[in-house]
Every structure is written in structure tokens, then in C-alpha cells.
Length: 80
Image (tube, rainbow, N blue to C red):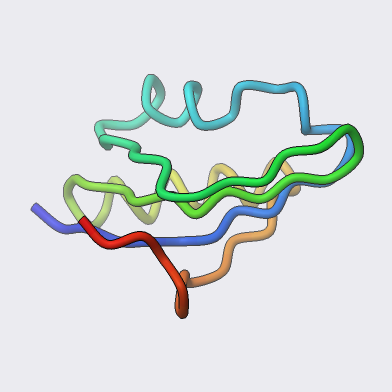
């Protein structure tokens, strides 16, 4: 079982869509929100994904396909 932390940045038209919930239901991954800042017209989330590496990559590709920007999370992330 692998683990990966990523930063998801959402464009305005996806702010209200429950993408993280959908991700956890569409793919066999566990999602853990580590940090977030969501506003009316912009949002980002540092997300920790656990699961098989292939499932994690499929989930991230799905998010990219929706228009979510996916970057590796680095720097000041809450440890735990």
C-alpha cells in the first residue's frame, strides 16, 4: 500500500463539486485532507492519498481530466 501527498488546485467551475468525495468512491483510495483553502472563486487542497500505487495514479489522472491541477505537495504540510 502506497501513500502520496498532492496539492489539488480547483478552477472556479469546480469549487462546488465534491471531487474528493467522488475520488474516494470511484477509486479504491483513502483520502485525507491535510490543509485547504476554499473560497468562492478559487480553492486548493493538500490531499494525502493511500492505496495501491496504480489506484492513486488513476484517481489523480481522473482529477486532471476534470480540469483540476495536480502538483506534488512539498514544503509546509501538517505532519501526522
